[in-house]
Image (tube, rainbow, N blue to C red; front, side, top):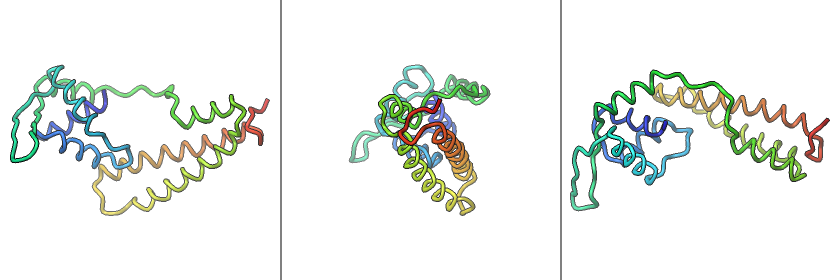
Length: 174
């Protein structure tokens, strides 16, 4: 429930509309996929159902109805418990990079070619993010950028190791 907890964390600063929660999430995690509004509102609905947030106000200033959400004491407790609990380290769930590589191998498609093309994409993204490091961004944005760079670095090492394991035709070497 990390998206829900992140939204609870945003609400810990005070009541907010769904639009503001989405904007703040996307600002805090610039390297992540932006949240869809539907995801924000469905998450808020679940949080409300579970008693972690409540509707603080509903207004309509000439436009669509806007609902302001506030953190409840149960939400504060849930957020504190989430922040207190360390995350499990591995095994890591398969991501699309691994899924595509293994699917290519099983289909007899040139996995080596996919791995080479993926490396180019990773290196380009790494260069973009390195250019952002050290700029006058907030510390939380710099931390998010560092996190992404370190993951890209690990992926690049994995791409190199995986490419070394496949033959030119993309088959696993014995």
